[in-house]
Length: 230
Image (tube, rainbow, N blue to C red; front, side):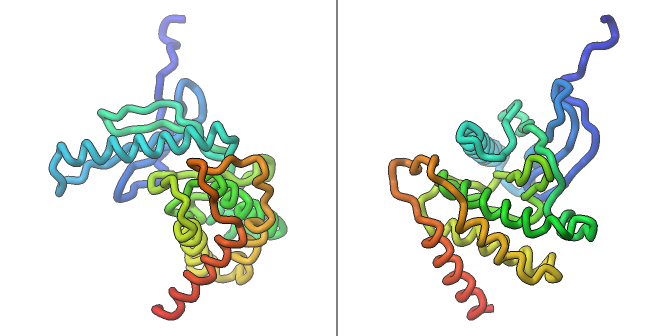
């Protein structure tokens, strides 16, 4: 019908303005989506900035594609424009964990959501991927769908147990700083991590990945180092 053609992208609201990107929520061809546009770095030579933007967007898109195929709860990539520096991803259901942990009405569900977060993180690591920015802003909780992992701008493929331990340390520091009222929050995450069923996961690049016990041991070492130097 004339005058009723659907717009490709319809912005609804701004979610976040960061140093690296601006993130908006909206509709992509009528589907709930998130649009992330990389911000130019004025202090960088334009050609170098364009190459770095392309490299980082390509890496993020590939990681999301492979994790989606593996069945992990991450956003599907819906569209990508390297030249303009933007990516559109599926909008995953749920609220950021940072909001859920501050919601007194959700108190009864907190052990479940933190355990599910640990399971999702272990499944991510079992694919040979480290997130790089595991905060309670980048974990979503939905009572029906469970936990989703978002914002893979700093993610990388790796078999290094140190990288997986650092993921857990970043989340531990976030929980301690932003949610001190939940003193046992990290222990609930670690419980979910240690009991995750990863039997269907294929080792990354045919290399043996660290077990959950090995990652947890490395996390404890990292936590001890931080306490000693802090």
